[in-house]
Image 1 (cartoon, rainbow, N blue to C red):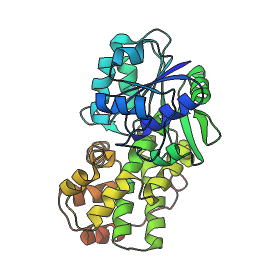
Image 2 (tube, rainbow, N blue to C red):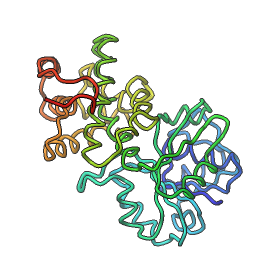
Image 3 (cartoon, rainbow, N blue to C red):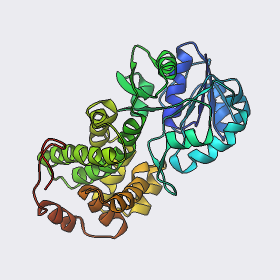
Length: 336
């Protein structure tokens, strides 16, 4: 197989390196010629993975036609706000029988489309899939033991992705619930911001546990209304991804929340981060969608008030704690 990854950020580079190390002809597309030259000549991506040496066989290019034209698998690893544009640019060079896989954990603002829906709409005739899980890119690049999920209705796509990316440190599990896997990856970014704020404010371990478990209930409730399988949220793409992003300072969204909890403005926080934190926009568009669908999401609503309405954190916390008490586990007892 020939593998291409569109997007030279941290995760795109990390999975490109796995594929190349596994012996597959792998091309990494990015827009920055200086960065491409650095990868090809020095075998490092100093901007996103400065501490990781890349496989000698990995080829970087700024020519999207060269990256896409001969590939069997195309992974799209760009921020959600530029996802559709990149796919539209690349699809001119696609071929029949090619598989396209999104690794982007976000939602398109204008349409509330998931990345798999964008792929399906733009690439009629090509099978698509979603790769998601508790996958902090810097740990993947370092070879830390990691597991992920490839979701697709195509068994052949799932099998080929497992062959391309499975290694002694990276295990790839399969699922058919693309919607659930993708929603888990997108929604958990919201709760990572909340958890980062709680850590910065030293609210305690009990609070962290409450936030993570109630986040799982809230995101699965919303996802089921959107058509996902609730059981997906008990796996790596649900609770697994939620745990790692809600507890690790390597998570960009957690760092955003931590900075907000320390009193920084959102503008300062995003600027200092230097990378895209999908959870900021996902909070706003999920709040709008949940309101439209009349799905109860108190944590999302609370974070929206803090970020976009400048409501004091302590006031939001008080409102959350004084809400009407309800059942613990979703789908076990009827909601009152």
